[in-house]
Length: 301
Ligand code: NAD
Image 1 (cartoon, rainbow, N blue to C red):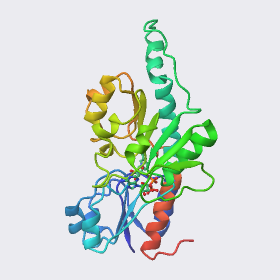
Image 2 (cartoon, rainbow, N blue to C red):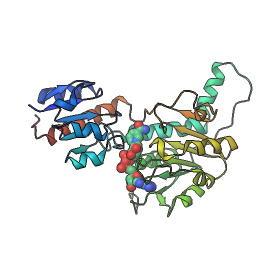
Image 3 (cartoon, protein in one colour):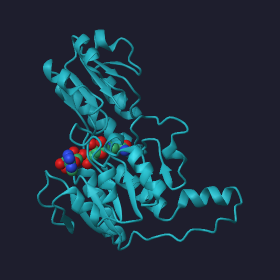
Image 4 (spheres, rainbow, N blue to C red):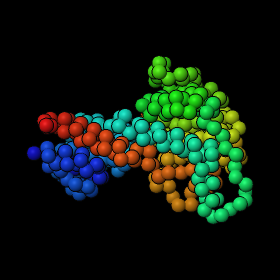
């Protein structure tokens, strides 16, 4: 019977489904490198050394979208299939993106701190609306499109996007495609990042790009930490060029306590919880479990 190592917890019902069809090493799946024909991972990195020593390994199932945590070259070298769960978490990440944008635009976290500590001063801040705001999306894949849908149809934001691999947006979405990143940024009141972390996107949102945003723009990143240069973002926040930022992802995770960016009063931060809703966890768990069983050739009833 094939052995599947589940390195991190997945939804109970998805775990039970796996157990009905295969031998399963429960989290943290100690010894998976000797025994496992397949593994299921969430955030845990799977490096080249681990892949090369796991002689039985045929399939890596990523519970989530971003496979930047897996050494894809080492997997390809050994003919190991890498699967992920595209779309299963798109609603969850898109909703968090809107939540962070609203939180920054209305200073929700800032006001929350003030109310709790009984502060009368400084006076409450005047916020800005998502309605009519120009939202610039970097990346118009599954999540970018979902954010566009919510922001446009739900709130009346005006959407533009830059994605070199998408020439025309879906007809249901009135999105103007920008020819390049600087053109996108020049007309973005809110810049939101939805690209994977690759060698081409690392540091994509740097000091130069941030300087092309209109004064007082807002940056939201629920994509990947390394895509936004944190030092450049902090400098732009300190100068007041960027009014605020909503960040779910960081260059190093978890971010170090006392990270200067987190000390900035106009930064709203969440600990990479974009996909963490009960609904998305259920969908991702079942999607990855079923795909891994399929890839191992195990019939499922
Ligand atoms: P996707 O593959 O559907 O979309 C990614 C899009 O980025 C594609 O359309 C692609 O063409 C585009 N892209 C690639 N390189 C680009 C570049 N240089 N400039 C502009 N666009 C570029 O993936 P998705 O499901 O939409 O997810 C997007 C990213 O969100 C994932 O790669 C992952 O890093 C991140 N994510 C974060 C969380 C979270 O918990 N915060 C959860 C899921 C996904």
